[in-house]
Length: 129
Image (cartoon, rainbow, N blue to C red):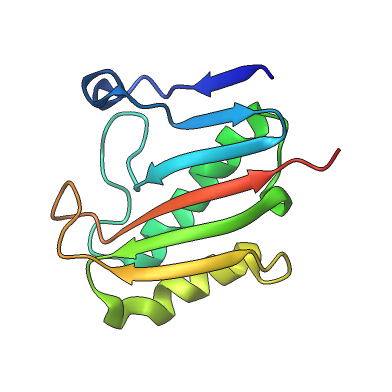
């Protein structure tokens, strides 16, 4: 099966050795994604709802590059530095996935790569044949 790697060009991809997304066959895995725009600025600083929405929209574009849609997402893994914000995270997540209902895990972690990131999300998708 052909492997397709999607890069955003972020300097960290080469330093750490990862891709934003990898597609093999009909399976797509998307790396943990934070709310950083194309110029490296954090979107929604101090606002977990805005960060969550921005992440899903950012990943939607990556999925589209691979011929997929949000409706192809079967799992999300949400990492947050403050689990007490779960309702705001869940509200934003639900605005995109309320009807799709992928499997979802939300975990509190002690820190993300930058103290201003409140949430990071991984996505798994399967393209219908």
